[in-house]
Image 1 (cartoon, rainbow, N blue to C red):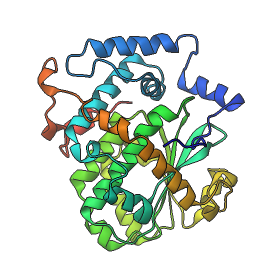
Image 2: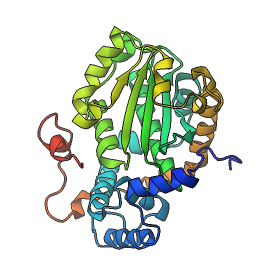
Image 3: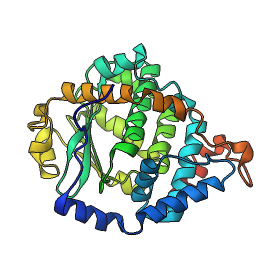
Image 4: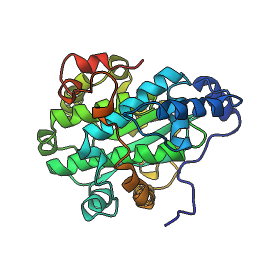
Length: 312
């Protein structure tokens, strides 16, 4: 299945030039940097011998073209693939349980355009007031699947990510089912294993319950990200940060409605079905890691190791 339209409009013109500056990307040397990373992968006995060029380029951009930072991110990415099978296996978006979540439970599409300073915006909201524990885990899996697709589809790169969380129907029953261990693993993936430059998190349609949720998640966030969380009583508070016209119609914008954007992304994930199958075996093999293998208990511990993993 092939989609006829681009879901992610690529930056161009002055925005593209400014992104190159912000990411420290030299178009004359970036192919050499990709080659160096691919050569490095071949020399790591515990990592895959090779990987596709577009995702490697995205990792370099997310590392501001620091080869050492890119290597650490890639090592952690393949490590988390092995450490979190609940997120990185059974990623067939045509499965009825995943299809149901995408169709009837949660919407979380990245928006087509970028902001004037080159940032990609993603809006996440519930469309059903309750999810069971497995559906919560699968929702996080789907979010990481979108992240994997973007490793390839962000062909020109972006200067960072902005996430909007619409908490209008977040209910107490869902909050009660959140597992600290699951949220912790997900936050390690997002902050340490993916090449994301998280610039802003906006939470709209808040309530005292939502504030409890934010306080629940904050301990798992780096300090610099905690400082980038903005809470708004309604959607109008967003317009100071994000051009109104690039938002979906439900939020006063012109980029289409959330249901249509969500359906397009559902089809995109289904289009990647065979790619996700191939990725099941492309993971870190701790038995071959030089030196001390990664201890998953330490990796996911509440104290100690997680703080040491921070990559600035």
